[in-house]
Length: 150
Length: 150
DNA sequence: CCCTAAATGAAAACGATTTTCATTTTCAAA
DNA sequence: TTTGAAAATGAAAATCGTTTTCATTTAGGG
Image (cartoon, rainbow over all chains, first blue to last red; front, side, top):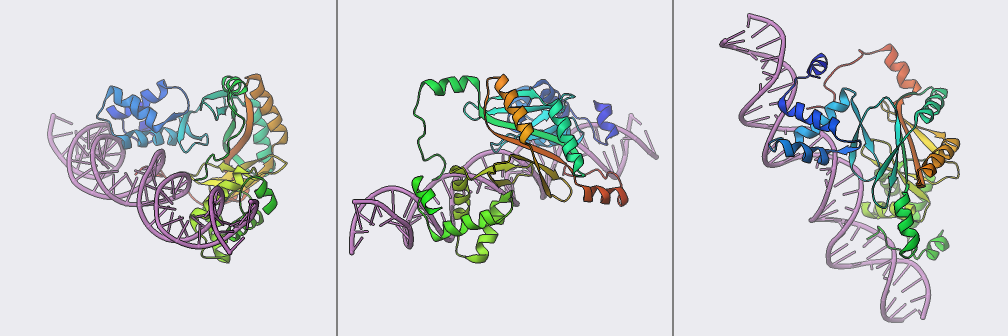
């Protein structure tokens, strides 16, 4: 990793090593705060900005990319060989991943037809997961008005 | 429209009418700022918060929905019968729409297989559009380093 | 014509992201 | 191994889009 970064013109530091390691040990869709907490548990002297900058760096060198699920929080996904989309439950905020290999193929073709050269694909589905659906089916009313406007 | 809103328990006002009309006259993926500017040209007494609240209202009554293309700006898309995705050019920031009717069908099925009940689908492709690609091919170097990190 | 709930405008609050700045550290060249 | 320029860090402040607050005005049914 140190060598890899060197070729890109970046230096290795203890903080950076900790941050990188932590990030890759965590699951997908990691937020800055989550990574910061995790890193802090091993070294509470690391600053928030450093975590943030390194997360950006990880993206910059192509090892991860930003994901926007829809809540105002930017999350970071490791770049995997297998492209995947997200099923985001609006009730419990859980995220289910699913393979979108073929989908991406179709998308790339559609993009190409329009002269567009794709870099990355984001496929996000919002809805309700199995568990929450079961819960909703049993309890609660159907609709209450006043959900957002002041 | 006034009647439609009444059935939902909302009142019509001059500002609201102007905002709604402006929004539907504009193209897709409209940001708060863009709508605000447009509205202001007809009535410069309308407040930003009012534009924002009405945009939220338009979503609430199901006539539009939020879109996150990847830059930190929330945009609003009219809800159309035909579901569409976006090709977002990271160079010139332009957006090309494309039909994703079949894709959505596939997605809905995949979601269903996992017990997930989908509400909405977001298909966003980032890349470079035809024009920008042509430009890059001719001029400029390939890579300059220092593009984001302080 | 009233009254109440809803809507508005201005400004402030918020919260995540990004930058600034002074200091420390890395690492390659001498 | 010493040295110096470039890069990295930490803390705090600045940004920036979004959201809320609050005092006031307005819509529209009764």
